[in-house]
Amino acid sequence: MSHITQPARLLAAERPQPARMPALIILAYAVAVYLLFLAVLGYAAGFFADFGVPKGIDQGPRAAGPAAVAIDLLLLLLFAVQHTVMARPWFKRRWTRIVPSPAERATFVLAASLLLALLFWLWRPIGGTVWSLHGLGAGALWAVYAAGWAVAISSTFLISHSDLFGVRQAWRHARRVRYSPPPFTERGLYRRIRHPLMAGFVVIFWSAPTMTAGHLLFAATATGYILAGIAFEEHDLIRSLGDTYAAYRARVPALIPGSRHGVIRLDLSEARKTTGSSRHGK
Image (cartoon, rainbow, N blue to C red; front, side):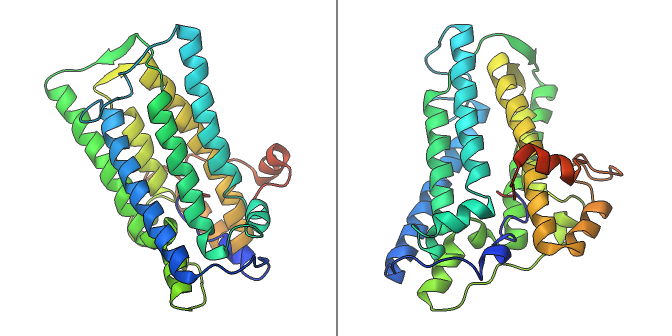
């Protein structure tokens, strides 16, 4: 999500170290994963637009309505579980007993990329049109769609693009430089909203000149997951950054610039009830 690398502060001193893997292998692995991610991300842009890819969100083999809904929700659930569980500090502590710490983030990105590719491959279109715009209306929504991608991608460079996708960790390891997470920042879009990356994706999901029932299912479910994921992430960020993030959270809205209290107002006690021992993310 946004300040996704910050919970690494919780792990730096307590990660057990597995058997060493040559640093250049880890770096090559991280770069290969990043290139795979770029390919999946590029496909995603065409998938949601139903343009320029072999199979878009409203294209491909169809199934009966209930079966299609079940398949699509299962695919979204798989991604949500991976993205949520693998981002938790308790999981990272156990996972880095198997995977070298410099490769942990790249492995997260690999798993997310493969599950997104699976979703694109197996997604079943669902018929029915919720709205359909043409002419200037369609053009305006395409402009908003492009703006959503611009917001999402540009926000990854405001903290550390390479750290978010696991390359910086491997690069510093290859240079034998001790890893430290990027510092907390409020520059750029982070002065206006706490989660510009997620805000960009919400815009992407809903900016469809033709909104089908299947696209609506994706947009509504993914938006709901984003709202829940922000609550998980902010629970971890407050534990990691303390009063610094608590003050930032009180001052800056989550997703909508100018909204007084933001969008996410989940009490941390409720988050604990929901997650038990929970921790952007991501």
